[in-house]
Each structure stands twice: as structure tokens, then as C-alpha cells.
Length: 123
Image (cartoon, rainbow, N blue to C red; front, side, top):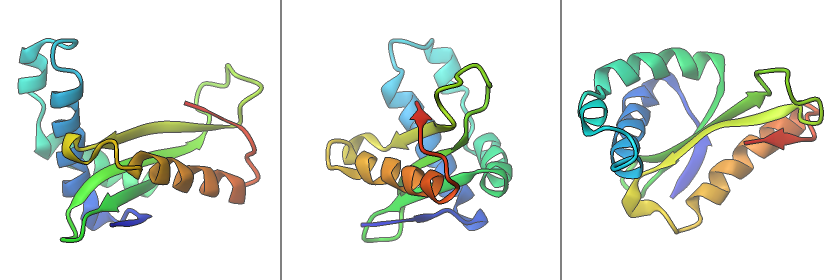
């Protein structure tokens, strides 16, 4: 498994993880009609923009498939004076959860924030 900074070419893989994770994580919480209408293509467009604007990290399996991602940066609302940074999102395909991948993805965001002298973070 490899954790690395995402590139624009990773947008489709990130979109797949995003949609599939929503469908497994939020089933029974979010209406099925909403989950069924999530679009890989729409999420891919969103992530093509997001990769350029944010720090996005991906986890790849041994076959080079994107299996998870995290993103973070400066705290966005300005409502939390005690927190400079923020973990914006973290998603991992269900079959890869519970293997420590989330910890590695969060650590990538933390390391990036530290490099930018941001020493606190909210989730």
C-alpha cells in the first residue's frame, strides 16, 4: 500500500471512493434515493478542481487502485480560534477499513499542516 499526494489523474479513483464510501457509510442514514443518485462523473469533476485547490492524499493498494483519500488545510469557517488547520474529509472503501489506512491518511494531512506552521487541527 502507498500513501501519496493526489494528482489530477487520480480524480476518477477518488470520485469512486467518495461515492462508494457514501453508499456504504450512510446507508440507512441518508435516503436511498440520494445515495442512488450520486454520480461518479460529477464527483470526478469536483475532485479535478479540489485536487488543484486543496491538499489531497490518496491510499493505493498493491494494484495501484485508489482505496481511500484524505484532504485538509486551513480551517475554513474562522469560528474556531483555537484551531488553525482542519481535516476536511477522509474516506476509505469499506473492505479496507480497520487496517490502519485512515491513520496514515490523517498523518499525511497533519504533516502537511505542520510544514505550514499550523499546529492545531479540528475534524
